[in-house]
Image 1 (cartoon, one colour):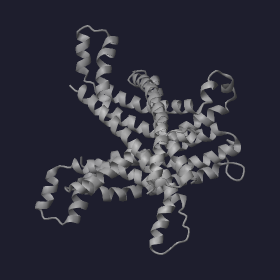
Image 2 (cartoon, rainbow over the protein chains, first blue to last red; image 1 turned 180 degrees about the vertical axis):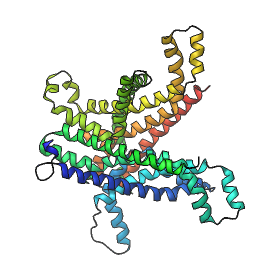
Image 3 (cartoon, each protein chain N blue to C red; image 1 turned 90 degrees about the vertical axis):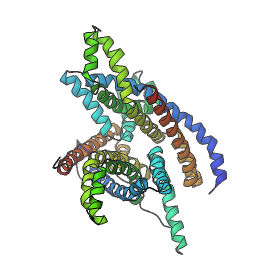
Image 4 (spheres, rainbow over the protein chains, first blue to last red; image 1 turned 45 degrees about the vertical axis):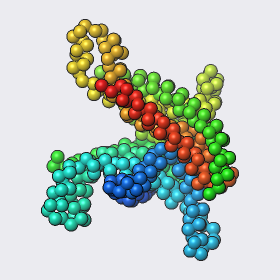
Length: 230
Length: 223
């Protein structure tokens, strides 16, 4: 227990900050994932074969390649790609991207592939009559989407999105290989300097369990809220 | 694009794929037994046995695989007592540590898949067996297990693919599997995109094969 005390002698405060970092990365990645899903779900549902192909290749490639490999691609290739884009605009200095941004982008792209599949499934299982009815009523497109389709889609998507959230949360542990100080990295540092890996890694496991447990509780509440009337 | 590097790194990566496949097959076989064992515990009526099996699957599904590998590889070596037992022969090898971690992890997911398969078997089928006077053991082995396997094939196929991606974590405990070698080549040549295309292509190819084998089995065993 001494090892977990706050202040200079223990690792309590460091681990608390690291936990915050894990939560921050997970939420950022989840939001980036939603943005990707927002782009790729319409592509997967579109009638054009070409757009379908783009949408399908995104989800197939990302879901078929290990997360760690994607993270290595971003870690080693991220600043190179940004520098290349910057050089087009005439900026030739060395640019270093921060580990938080690379990490959440890598995890976000992965989480986006799963979210895309969830949204696609949810939209496809909405009754066709709903689409036709809102067309017949002459609703404008934004009203049609935000007031008719989205509430129904969310109800169907939330249980599966909670799985995506769990996957994303657990995937953030992989960013530790890039040096971002989240739970896993902090435990690694603490284990290295105290020579007590068993304790710190087990504690990391407890922290992750706590996070998944608490987020499940929250998501269950959301689920109840969105299935009102059913 | 450096095509020469892509062609040169292909044999090296293919060689490393062997280790990935070895890790995958070993952990799937062990994991299937662990999963079956815990699934049987889960359908047991004793609440303590039931809770224990639930706790196992909750802990292993709620924590990242990376933590599990690190606890087994770095953590267990810290226990002095373990170092003196015969178990140490296995636990000092990163290869076996990775297999233990993967088996326990996939075992937890498999137990959930099999449990839900057991629970969706229509009670009428079991009752029919009972009324024919078939003993409980034979009902379990000859009726419940085959139906459960058929029921769980699609979900288990997903689990195999997830596990295949999970074996990439073996590279964090010094094993040179496909991801490990890919990382090594990337960090020596600084050509991440080329290596990613080749290594990712090999992974995608394996996903494709697994996906189709499972589809074939599903068709074969459908009724």
